[in-house]
Length: 454
Ligand code: GAP
Figure 1 (cartoon, rainbow, N blue to C red):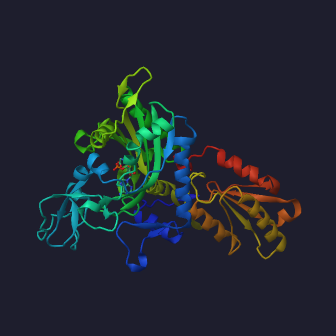
Figure 2 (cartoon, rainbow, N blue to C red):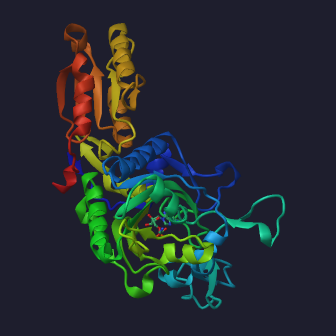
Figure 3 (tube, rainbow, N blue to C red):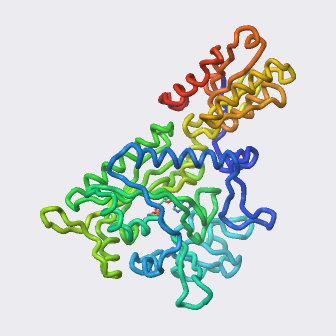
């Protein structure tokens, strides 16, 4: 196998996602809507896996974190108290010439609307306004009246739904700090400079965990969560040369943050934030205590009261999926043929195995393949494919990242064994058909690392 040495571009990933039905632009028949995307079959399956793996690490495998699913639309006072109404802004400039809008703090990443395109402000025609603050929250109205009194917001983060439920959950879950509340759900931001596919969306699915700790332990837990989240990505096969930790300078931290470190991934657009891990101090619980009048504090059995500090790992499924796709994408030459292969961790891959009758019109092979497929699909997402040449069927599965293919062939008719083909090494071995289910369970439980980092 020889690898082709082209640098990966975002267009390559966009095109694979479209071709294979992972992700496509939303509202496309009406011309689309900026930075909104719809997930197709394989995209949904991959997202489901990422969500389940996160919940597994956060909730299932721990006894100090519980789950929550709070509303998308909250009382608007939540966002006043949290500081989002005044602070959740980006500096925006307009160009009076090309009529485009840019983030004033990211002009070096933007392109001006005129040809030949340059950075905004670099051509003699550019006529930029002074920066002004632009709030990123989407406004809506609750109830029949559409005036100021009915204004509400689509949540820009899931975290606030957790803070306002701190008292409920702490009592009901019978946990004491350090303990956490995890939530997965849609968040919405009216981003000024969307783009770069699913990296920066206006509607995305966040996974956030707020870990409430005694203030004196906050630094230690912050370090712990940065390390734990870094390890989670490596365990799921992300190559460590593409992942790094970067601590925020004081002037780039959010209004609530005492300290933040980003886990950055080397996307085709460069090193960018994949996940943020912040020490939010007691900012949120203190603000909600003050504004709501409900004390959000912890009282120890000995009567000691304190407002816990909060350590928050926060990420979107969309950014994780983009990182996994970029990391997994490979073009290589096998024999005299090029193949595109997605080397996804088998637990992330949308389809775990393909069941392929070598000669579909052979009734013996077709029937056996169907029986195997029907047995396996009770336990895993698997695909049965009986259309086209076998080589083409393998390549289709390679492109969606299916780790194994079980092929029913002439020998199966004689001895009830099948061939298993490995996506990464292309090695083939024979297995008794009756042992395939167990083989697949074992294979999915094994550790996996990308052959490219060995
Ligand atoms: N509660 C803290 C918070 O929301 P953030 O750094 O603004 O902090 C956390 O967002 C994570 O959510 C990011 O690291 C990224 O993974 C994801 N995220 C933020 N904005 C996004 C967007 N417009 N599109 C996709 N994902 C986004």
